[in-house]
Image 1 (spheres, rainbow, N blue to C red):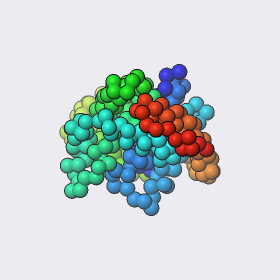
Image 2 (image 1 turned 135 degrees about the vertical axis):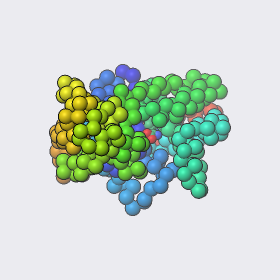
Image 3 (image 1 turned 180 degrees about the vertical axis):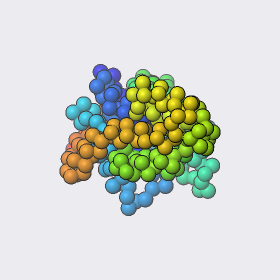
Image 4 (image 1 turned 30 degrees about the vertical axis):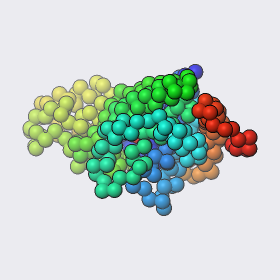
Length: 331
Ligand code: TRP
């Protein structure tokens, strides 16, 4: 089976943007690939993070992934910081990564423009990402569009390493999800926790409604009698993911003909969306009641990941001509 790797930041709660753009896909892909999924706590250190809640957020993210259907019998789920080889391989990759490539990464430029003091982690973030994937010789990487550039760099790092030290790594391909970019409830920017425009997947139906009710729609619809254009409305886009196709058509013509108001349109979406997440919400509650289980899954995942990681780093060290140490890395 082809090996697949992907990672997600420990942002705490999963929201529907994460779910539609990535996790829904992850759950499907574990049936056809040898999947390795990672909560990337080391990456989180390059941004704003609160030491008081980092571990809780990491655990919550893992619990939500399991609630969504990541199955430890099918795939490996682990926490990046539990496998020190990620950091080691990153350092090694720094030696084949041109600094100019890092400086021109769109995500680096965006993030560094918003900060007064820019830490080195922000710059070498994509090198750590390349190490994540190549440590496991991952060939397929499900990511959102915003990560495609980082995957190009990953392939370049693999190529540069292979050219200099001999064939070692595959050149991994990105696999885009069909839901490309989920726009937040403000109707403006990508759904993202830092922008506060999200709906969490395990929120109660009431809380989902509190967020949907004021959500941005087609600005042409000031009154119910104003005809709308569904393709301009983010609520209609969301119907595309939660509402059966035939009802979508009805809603679209009712919007164009001004026979349905935004309030009722949102009510339908709310019903379909909260029904869809009900089983996930229940599983999450069950998992909350047995926190030891989630910890055990992550421990077993780290152990499986570590045994692959050690092999790769052993091979890399040898190819680079480093002096071996008999006592290092043993258990
Ligand atoms: N940078 C990715 C993101 O923000 C997360 C990530 C880290 C990742 N390591 C990875 C994704 C390896 C895919 C593969 O979405």
